[in-house]
Amino acid sequence: MARSTAAAPAAPAERTDDRPGRPASYEQALAELDHLVLQMEQGELPLDRLLDDYRRGAELLAYCRGRLEAVEAQVKLLEEGRLKPWNGA
Image 1: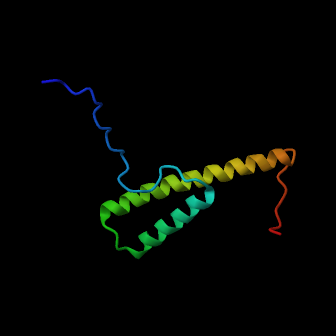
Image 2: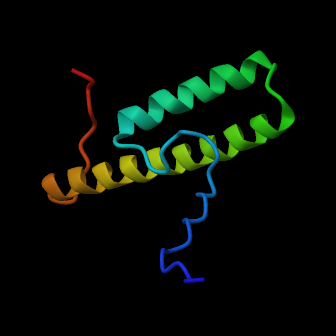
Image 3: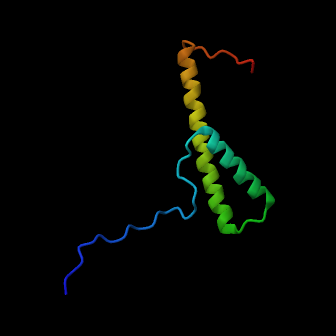
């Protein structure tokens, strides 16, 4: 009998849900985070799902904070090191 030279199937990814590992944008991350919070506040999720969603929320929060810090650093550079107050206009 001849041995097959085909490669073994790849191991499944660690994540079992269909959410991407890294959001495409700050806005996408914020929208997903809002959705997770709403689901958790309803209090009807199974414990394992709640824990997974909490972990995902922590990842999204870290991503959003990182993006905000990066933008703030860019603004400081553009303003020659002085961050001017924003009026919101």
